[in-house]
Image (cartoon, rainbow, N blue to C red):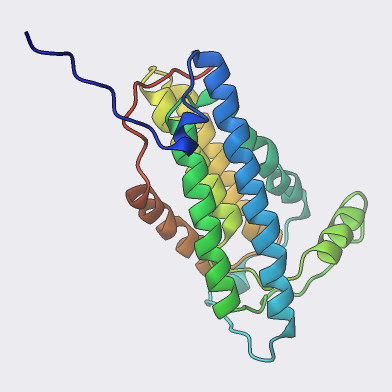
Length: 231
């Protein structure tokens, strides 16, 4: 009599997020990878910016289209909606999608960080502070804490596009096409906002979007029974 096939063994990192119980596993998976993404981001991003500020040679990744982009201060709220957007997979993405998303974001951070160090960039836009509140305070604070050298590819866009893709893949299978459209439009608005608040150029956005399919090809979801999203 043939013996039933054994389930594939999981690596320790995957065991941490694929435990028994769909709800607890989802929570563990999101928190586990959110911690690692934050460690990678706050270790690499400011370090790369600091190293770039010490360099005499920096690069201009500018196109003629950048001169046509106006400053629209109101889009700063869309720009910062990036942070709640990144939290959506906690409810809208199950396992193993959450783990794959986290791994892709960590790898994307490493790749972008290496490019930031090798090719520190100059921001073409003048860092103008709007005259009226609350935009004056918001932009002044943002300019104070963020140096304009980590530009190409935009890590803001990499995280946004990866999150959008993970949510749409999880929700499309559940027939929620309207939700997928809403998420895609929100993602597109965030991408546009990076240019409309003069934090990134066209090439920064394009190269980030090109990096996303590479990350998806390099890191595939683990071959385990899927667990549905919370919603």
